[in-house]
Amino acid sequence: MEFCPKCGSVLIIKIKNSSCPRCGYTKKGAVKLSTKEKIEEHNEIAVLKKDFKTEPVVNETCSKCGHDKAYFWMVQTRSSDESPTKFFKCVKCGHTKREYR
Image (cartoon, rainbow, N blue to C red; front, side, top):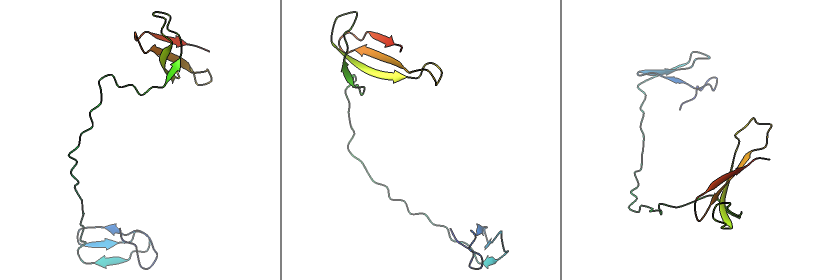
């Protein structure tokens, strides 16, 4: 990016010259554009288990199997002035229940 030496505005780059949109200054000569890109090789690939869960685990009793641990997340399912819906998914059997407040 180049700036006008007279007014400091950003010069508009054209193929054979650059010009200032504010004061009309023109810089003669071809504009050289170059990019430098460094390509890094990553030979390592992270492998995650298929059942990898990122939700937090809380103490919540499952109504289906009675297990006391469940994954927990919240979603805004109603209008924004309503409280969000809480979802609990049992760690053991996968039963999901929701809680409105």
